[in-house]
Image (cartoon, rainbow, N blue to C red; front, side, top):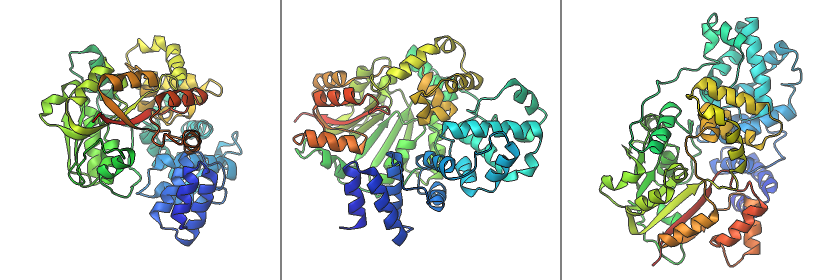
Length: 482
């Protein structure tokens, strides 16, 4: 068995630590193998808890790798530094801490490449930033100072600060960008529906998600992927030139991922936010993606494109619509008869704690939104003890906090509602994703007759036993009944 096959089998069985160990052994013989490096990253994302203690150089190369998304490495990198270095050992000696970070290539890289995704590290670094401002010692630590300025760009200015720091910023303009990075002027959304208008206005001010580069994957036609979910042959997707609609493309992350994975297919993307589309266009240009068709368009008006699609994907969009099922119906109106719909929506169960947090900020939700208000909300959440939502990647950027806690409209689903919609629209479920490999392996062992996880009642029971399983979103693929 090849190393790649062994890693894949271990990972698919939920043996993530063993898969990581296998990948690390394989890298010793072939350190530049991209697929094995991606396997390491996948294991880190899926919660591998051991094996990285002696891997400082590997973590540094992964977070700097232009073919790997730094967000997938950053939390493991900060955890490594907390557990395997003396970087934060002297919280009361800022000068010593600054000196250690100044000479630590991994710490500087993590600050420069991605928003710090670790609460303990952010707290230490926020205090260190304050010391640099108040003491005026920034010239003694030029790498750290520059990295903190870059970090503010990565997190959108998310780190809270006090009135003393704000007063000092005017006298220290060279360091102000470490607190308040430059941002574009907030645009104005013009839509007749009040929910659509308020949601669009949110993204005009805070395009989401913030991202820079993605992990590259081996290309394949999207038809090949769908065939794995559709052995019955309900769908009919061309091997080349399949038309894909990204309904609600946001800042273009999914668009670039689709183009990299499916280079021979045709991609059209729509969104309601001009600022998000500008962000998407910029990132596409930076990543060499030039053949995507973008339109500023309300999803409900998708028929105005005057075309139909083999595959429609809508990620994190339906639950923000004034009537999610009406939006779903609009998409089906432009789906080809044997096309496939890919949907990702919030889980009502997984979002219960988020809903509780949002109720805590009911007063703030009535105020005009601003960066200062979002920073204040973060400060209040940081004061809570052991709140799981603080581990969400969205919590570490200003746009992410807006989307996570202060979104203008959110209507999560449950599996029952999904099932009713599938019945209403005459759709067959092709595959319902189970995101954690270990739990997916357990489900398949318990339900060997359901390899594509199509039993929504069984999925509902699974979620009750693992209420945070769909903390990101439900994800499923469906097609019309034959």
